View 1: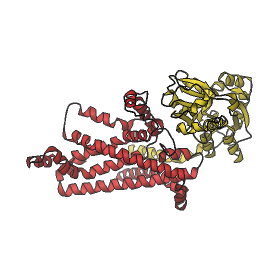
View 2 (view 1 turned 45 degrees about the vertical axis):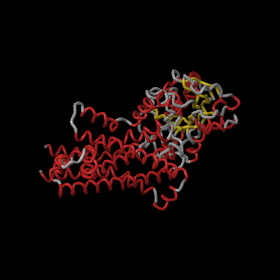
View 3 (view 1 turned 90 degrees about the vertical axis):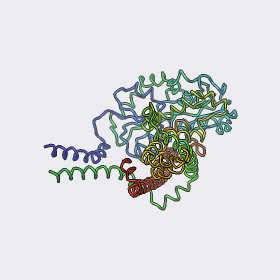
View 4 (view 1 turned 135 degrees about the vertical axis):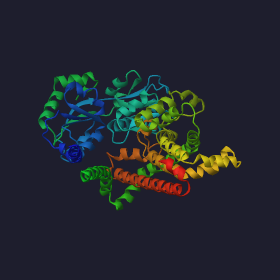
Length: 244
Length: 274
């Protein structure tokens, strides 16, 4: 009897790898799966608690969707990742649903004495940005260029994989400054101070939503409607995002 | 019944073997060898390999210099609290890498435990190549120290005391008797530690950050290239697999070589080494 049980156990184990690949198909009745930009971490769950969320850099999420990840809805912090997926016919037409602005964060003690955006170009300052292709990083470089602060790029000590990495290094007081979205600050409000970036160099930070073709369209569209509706826009507004 | 049992064992081995090798084989199937070379000529890939090589070698020298005498002490002396020391030395083996990174910040960061002392010495470690070296040392050294302790323990103590009675001082016994006899095991531990260091990711990205040409090692470059240049990521990945495989094979050869040396020359040591 024990021998037979063992065989059954091993046979079940052997089946596991084969079964793993099968659940990528559409039509499963599990909760709605939302792939959302890291900066929406505190916002998106308020809209629908039942949904399952995956938070990461928008470009990383797009790469996962391209590789067949089980997403129903994609909330991107910039247009490019959704546009790329649209071009590959992996998502439906995208819609802008909110906009954000960038701020400079410095450690509470502000060891480098950063008081203005222009201070980021001061020599010897330790600046942390998002990497190439990470929207928060690309927008930050755009803003620095618009303000004529290209010299600040020489101060970069680390290119983080997502905007929370930037915030973390500043909150730990290891970097002198970082550039993040206004909506990220709340997560580290006790450890960082905010220095504003002038409106005339603010990049056009718009969030785009797209329903993933292979996912549960109906539930995704319903979520999207709520996001664009009154309740959704109020939650976005409370979090520091402006309605599109 | 015994045939059934043998079948179960064989099946289990097949499952394990397939599960562990298919991802590696699949990686190579996606990178044609001809493409591999051209992708690796990518400037970012070369830079990252350079950083990886420099930091891994530097860390390894430190690990050998400090780890060897420390392991010798632990292998040849018994003292109160020895087990606690062993546990402390092995703790990094089981720490999640991100926790290791946070710990390094908490200790050596500028607002860390030793931050002000380091600053007085003019040292700011985070985000530098030194930070990468420290991260590698932290996660990789236990692999060497463990192997080195076992290697020294398998040296027959009678040979050491014989050398002593023939008039050799303790340092000479260590250098001329213990080291050569333990060389195979030391080499095996050393290659394992080097391979672990080369693949280091979590503690590095936490403590040293990620800046191409400065702190971006090959594993970080792979992660970085995933969303932009998948081919480069694959090529770098395949290269790391090849290097790690070569290192493991070396380890195996060294271990086999030691064992045969022991069985031919020092039977008592061989029986204790397992």
